[in-house]
Image 1 (cartoon, rainbow, N blue to C red):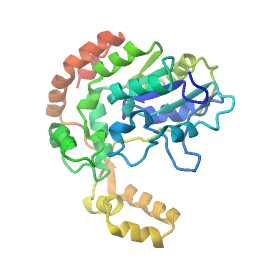
Image 2 (cartoon, rainbow, N blue to C red; image 1 turned 120 degrees about the vertical axis):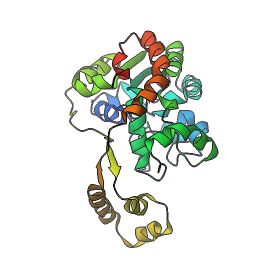
Image 3 (cartoon, helix red, strand yellow; image 1 turned 90 degrees about the vertical axis):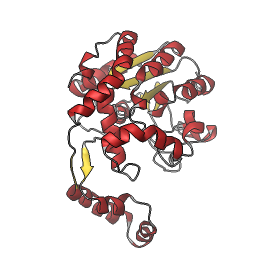
Length: 302
């Protein structure tokens, strides 16, 4: 393990509570996790260890080793140094190779897993808030892989089904690292403090009282107006003009007001769609269940 570099990683999966866990762990006095670069740019997910896979598709990230090292220059006496990048799980081959190269083989790995059907829908709702997604969920799950291949501007987040095939991903991490801790999203939601305490134990840290009331990146909302969505999320020249004449604090205040007015709670997944996805994920869930020795049967129940 190299000095002042991560000795643990939250590797995913996306939309499984990783942002909240990042926030909770960062409250511990013996934990250091970067939220900002030394020059003040927000970067909760560095993505450095999969830079070659995502650099052209994602605007935010830390793309070279020196910048990555600089994220941890403020480490003083913290015992647990970590970072969280959810795409390390999906791009496991690239990530594992670079984890070994830059961080060593003794890094502790935290994996958060969620019912892949619910995870896919949550990812869809997340993408639908942006200009990345304008289709129905049913259309999106059936053509996302082809869209991803054809459009280099799309984020991996739109790979709704593919990112939920956890078995090969988890298997590879278990085969390459000795210290793996797996959290099921349902447990994390229903007994948050207990699950966070288990992570502290996994990281060889003393228990510490932290605030677990705040949920980070909570989803479940949808746009009710395509026009407002475009005005707030589009990349038109008008946005750049507004940035020059309206202070950021005022723009953000107006944005929050418009979001509160023009969004509402999302609909549930259609039963027929749920059944279709249950069949798609059934074999992978069965293999994963044996691999991690946990009962995942409820993932297939409507």
